Length: 159
Length: 281
Image 1 (cartoon, rainbow over the protein chains, first blue to last red):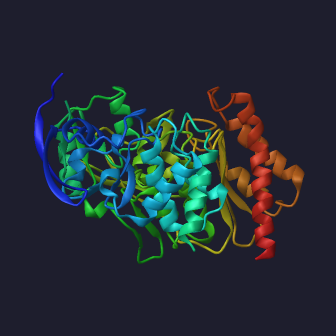
Image 2: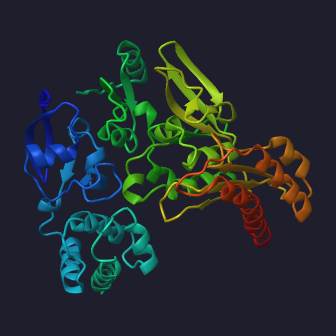
Image 3: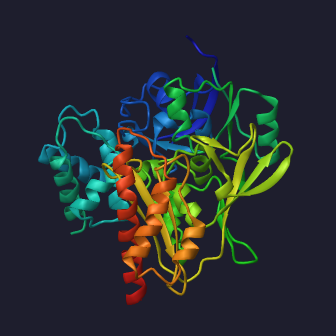
């Protein structure tokens, strides 16, 4: 069923955008269906899997549980807007090198959660990494290589 | 089809809730939007509370109490330095909710209003003897946390009412903590225990979560236990009273029988943690 659309103004990856989206749309729906920003994935649509994680005003949130109407006047950042971020680039390289990416569906959400952890705690223990990523479900890797990647990136960044 | 309304004041919000029968108040969205996505609720209007500045922030009142605005996010509560001593239990519970990302979204008012028996705030607030501030179209009232839960997911909140703040007694120097038994980090509790020692170390307050429609608290039993915290038989007898008033369910997180067995173990082990803290302080 087509829902009535309204215009929402928000800042996306540093640019002002106006997007026509359903009045009660989630940010995930607006990003993927109306703006064709595809890095955030629709996994569970219940806030459990973490694949849809994006930044709103610099804080990671679930885009599937965030209404677009609430983002009006706020800043939304997705993986597409993270070029040039040193922590993110280092994390990405370590994810590739350690085999932390298999199908890739969870990877964007994992990286955004990991980046917040390293901003708060530049030298996390493996246990702290596991806890910080407990809201990001990966069905491929078994997690060990993801934890290796985050620990490796933390070590490199703290040098 | 859901319309989203963004009132700027509490009065506007409750007027909107009264005006539109199928409207629901939206706080952090961590549960309500998930339910809407699953078509478990289909509100005509969502009255978003996030632009109401009166619902935000953690303040000390003139008489030393701590007042937590209903829209305060779990991450803010988990980082609040004012929640020390007897109130540390609440800060600790906030830090154990779900995961970091969800803690950036969910709010105390939303969690309390949703009243999930296995969620973390209710036992912590029951242990703190919290008061809830409530607003509706007919005015404001306050209510003790002990009078709040009526039944499973049923609360004393009337249709159209919202929680505006949670007020806690002034913190006193006494150890407190929250312990949760859960299948994995961030899950809802199989059973949980919020406990605070009295400042003199002779007594304690304890609330058990996830073992009935609301937190289990036996205040008469706590009074009777004063001065006997070091007597395992007296502690076991007290825990037995909590087991007697428990009404747990069988679910994916554990059987009712398992939950009943957890209660005395939680009470004695959290008590010994706090007593040790008190002795070494």
